[in-house]
Image (cartoon, rainbow, N blue to C red; front, side, top):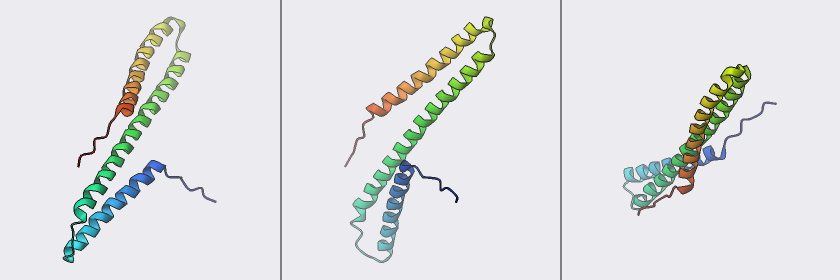
Length: 125
């Protein structure tokens, strides 16, 4: 049997909000074409669009954080391999340079994490 690839929950939520927004738009267009009352869509389209936009922002932020952590993990693997192959004379210089790069990556992770924790969503009416 072939194993099915499981879709991430965040992608499911992204597609659900996209479908809801698109459905609202299409329903609004159909009501306009049939000369029906469209006052409901004055509120429904911005509401579903706002939810979709917030979902996209969350998903992109999540992907950015995942990529930063993957970069850090790859860097640490590279650092270990480089230090194994290095002679004892160069080891201290290489280690100092690698530690500087590691500090930059760690600062980036800390900054991004702090931004996510402190992020506030302002809802305007």
